[in-house]
Image (tube, rainbow, N blue to C red; front, side, top):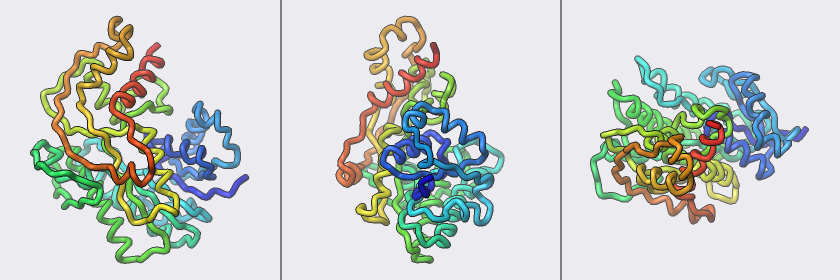
Length: 335
């Protein structure tokens, strides 16, 4: 068995699984931190992993409580690289400070302090979000006529949070700030790159039903495709799942300077998905499998991610490619 040189947390998530596949394809020996043994079986059963036949280059370690003190101490032993994706989703609760915000902060600082104990660690890549670097009012629809980048920093919204999205924003802003404060306070022997994706759209290989395909951020595009009509405008900005996963792996390369933030976003108009499905899946539209008659108004966010494309030498795929990826999988599972 190859000795693992990369730890991935959140490997059973939408982005995390694709990062795992990209990392194996790039030649890393991966140790995936999972919540239970059953999650390993899900990963090993996927077509991508079966095709790669990673054998000893993929191993698993169970971390049942990522917020426990020293939760990742054993998982990090001997590794050189870390991709930290595990973080709470934006699920409503009676106390979003305790279920969304604090777990995001503690999960991030916890793995960083564990990494301090492991001299072999050289690079940590953390999944943040564009919402960590955009002004709150801009994301709520107030046009500020500014061009934003991943180098921007914002104050965190204060609780109590009136909406789960605001709590999610707070979690990302505060986790990013905690990461940067950690670097200043601890001067670690490793460096950190942060990835800031927009809404991630792309076929989810861990989904085994059509309903599963449209969960999470894929549902933000599939809503209008399936006939959902909204009167509330949504901010623009999406990124193809494969692009953001590839970016995480490329950002591990020690030839890329550490201590950087990389945006991952392609501008979009949400209702353009209706045009794309009519173009690529006319029979499914005609039969009613995908009604393509919903409505999701868009307000534009001006975000410049050209630094990312220039640093890593690839262009982000457009909203059309993202849409086709998800609808193709949805129709295949719908039968």
